Image 1 (spheres, rainbow, N blue to C red):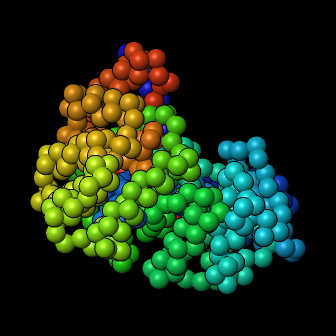
Image 2 (image 1 turned 180 degrees about the horizontal axis):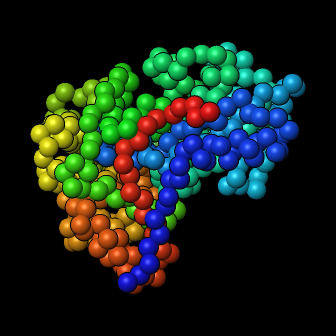
Length: 396
Ligand code: GAF
């Protein structure tokens, strides 16, 4: 049997205590607090957030932690246990066109909050993360949101839903304007609004949301996450090109957002460009699948939910063309070995897949995926099990 790697999220309080101690060693004083925000998987509703659609993400137990302390001067320092790159400079050095590497996310959000009028001041930030980077599990949003709530807490603000909504917007600006990733807001929203035992039904037209009970364990099922280890980037043009196709379609159809189209069949017929038509068909069918998935969850019909997951993957693979060989192989092998459904999750082009698997077959799926990887000569995948977990919060 090929050995498999399971990524452990760790114990939040123990991670926070250790990070606070390390901050104290480094800076000679205790941090004002340790803040955390989770990575995510999206159950269904992919590449629809920037089309005003519906999505259904959930927060992972794998999270990013930031110990933060105020400084007497105006300098911001950024250190991470996962990176040798450290950054120090005034707030402006983390603005658009200036910040590089992971500082574009952590420093970018400080810059963005200052633009919103927050008194950011000088800060020391030390980060530790259990969200694998480049795995399509939203390590960037976890980092942004952990830092964002630190600033809000330092200002003495209460982290109510209204403030969380404003922080989502600040984090999105950091990602779009500073990091240059033209993403759609789903990831920051779930990082800030996630709840244990729930998925979040998010309407990206008006940003309203509601928690939906998501408890596969009660039906003897595990949501298995597979990090394909295939490279995934949202800044190398593929993601942006998909957005452009959607904008082309909405321009032709005379709507602000593809979600606003009322007669979908007529709309598809009127799109002459075959690629633009397929992209649009994905968006239409995917939004419908999210509505269906929420109904199926309400009815406890996990078999049909699994089929909706797989249909979503097929649409992302064939119509939206954001899958890759590794993702397709994981989905195929998981289904062959008893998964009720499987799909790529997140932006695609690599990254991670999810599979809804009966508990007693999880080991078999893991081993079969690992063996397939071995056979094809790919770097070994990593696995996570994903009970839905809480969103951004202060730990100490
Ligand atoms: C990435 C983006 F950041 C999200 O906004 C979303 O578009 C997703 O890809 C695809 O659903 O995670």
